[in-house]
Image: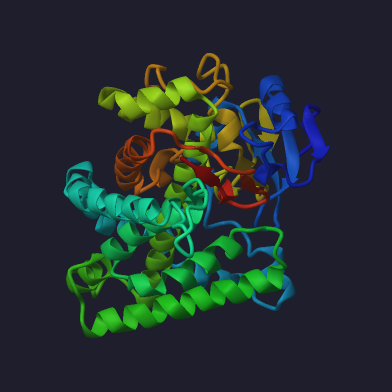
Length: 415
């Protein structure tokens, strides 16, 4: 790409933040309408766009910009795994496919993720949230030892491990048909796979292990399909979906179903703690919760930019020329704060009138699980804040850097 307003190589801007802020360099690129050459979390070199209009154009046109035309990641090539194997491993991964395969597979799943069907899960989500809040409360104060009246330690929790991660993990396990006892293995693997600081060979080993786990689970469901999502796909679409596709669907839903919501719950709690007036509104006003969740989704945008797309022809995006075969990636986080789309977008304001955002993507690849994620957040945030009205930080939060999905490693809290 030779456009005079395109910045030269800018490293890994596509997967970095500064706390809650979009990097100054990325914000400046967006405001100037410029692009940058970056390295994606998958190791490809690509052009990054960050304006609201440009990001929507990129995500909204699967004919000019295709996911399934992206070559194998460099680490796979270096390991002797060719593009043909990469394509096979992408089977069933809706975020790596385009029509017609994407259309066929998404049609099978859409009915299971309607808003109406997801609302049926609300009582169970409420139970899961309550169970984990009970466990946090019970594990809080330290009992006096040896009968002595020693000062009691203030109640504390590490929110990621005690609440933000296990709640969506249990929900997606029950929905998909994954034994909850296996959560430790798949949550650790997925977190490491999404971390671009891990050596590429190790990330490939983890990806292989995830596929082996899901293939074993698919085999078990083939023999005895239950009432869960994998069982439904096998019972109702057995002749239309391959085992490779079932493995891809299962892995995508398992990882996306807990990683994104988990990081929203931890980051969102920290954001509200830093804005106590807005926290009080979410805690005390049930009518404010839905709008607050949408504003947190917009402001946090835990998925930095999604997957790179390859231009299928010489074209343009915005005013920038793009050559056929060139890879383009977006900054969803910067686009969601674009002043052209939302006034004062750098500021968190849960009273803001709801407006469209790109936290769940855009176009045909808009997140299938968005209704479920919204339900989990609408239940979890007010329940947590009401159960512990004096919730406060008890140490430094530890942010996740250079990962495909932004979030926190740790969030120590007290009440």
